[in-house]
Length: 347
Ligand code: LMR
Image 1 (cartoon, rainbow, N blue to C red):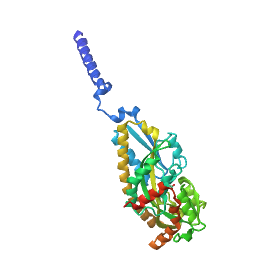
Image 2 (image 1 turned 90 degrees about the horizontal axis):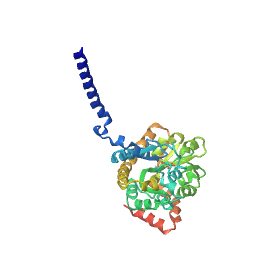
Image 3 (image 1 turned 90 degrees about the vertical axis):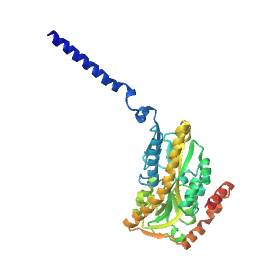
Image 4 (image 1 turned 30 degrees about the vertical axis):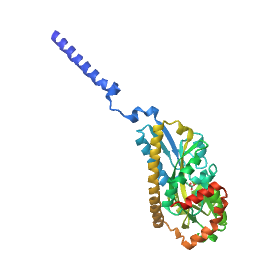
C-alpha cells in the first residue's frame, strides 16, 4: 500500500513538472516565433484610401497594389484600407473629408482640384497630350513635380500623378464627328473651367455631376452624352446607354494622389520613405497598366455592344483643334503659359 502511494506521488509530480514546462511555451512570448503583424497590431497606422471608381479600373487596381506594397515595405506597421466606388465619400465630398482628417488619402482627377490649385487646369487643355509616352514624361518629370509642389497647401500634400487614359466622347443622339455635331446636346462633365468652356465652344450644354450620378443621368436622359476614359465608360457600363462613341483622344483623365498633410507629418521619416517608395512603384505600374487596360476594354466594348465607334481622322482632329484654340489663349497669366510651353516642349 505504502509502495503504491509513493509511486502515485512520483507519477503525479512528474506530470506536474511536464505540464508546467509545456505551458511555459504558451505564456513566455519570447519562445514564440516573432510575428511583426501580430505584435504591432495596437500600434498599427491605418490609412483610409477612398476613391469613386470600380475596383477593375486602373485607379482601383493601383490603390490595391499600393496597399499591398505599403504592407510589405513597412512589415505591417502601416495598413492601407481601400474604399472603392464612392462607398465612403462621393467625388463632391471626398476632398473635404480628407482635409478634415476623416480619411487620409484620395486620388481625384486633377480637374476636381482646379478650384484650389488653378494651375492644374492646363492639364485639361484639349490635345495638350500627344500620346501615353508624353503623359508619362509630364506626370513623372519636372512639370509633374512643379504641380505637385503647388498642391502642398490647405491640409493636403501631393504624392503623385496617376494615369487612367485619354478621354472619348459619347452620345445617345448623333455621331460626334464634326464640331457642329455637338450643337444643342447636353454633356455630363467633371468640374473644371477648361472642360466646361470646351463644351461651350462646341455650342453644347455642359452639366456638372458627380461620377456616381453619370449612369443615372444618361439613363434618365438628363444628359445626352459625356466624355470619359474607356476604362470608366466600360466599368460603369456607360457604353450600354450610348449609341455613338468617338475615339477622339481630345483630353486626358489623370489623377492626383493626395494625403492629409497633418497625418503625413505625424509619421516617422522611415515610414514616410517606405510609403513614398510604394507610391513610386505603384506609379510606374499604373502608367503601364492603364494603357493596357483601356486597350483591352475598348475591344470588349467593340465585341459586346452595338455602339457605333468612329475614330477621328487627322483632318477632323484639326477641325476640333481650331474650335478649341481660344482655350489656350484664355490663359493669360505667366505661370500657366510657362507650364503650357513646358508641356508642349517635353519630348
Ligand atoms: C469622373 O468624374 O468622370 C472621373 O473623375 C472619375 C474617376 O475618378 O475616374
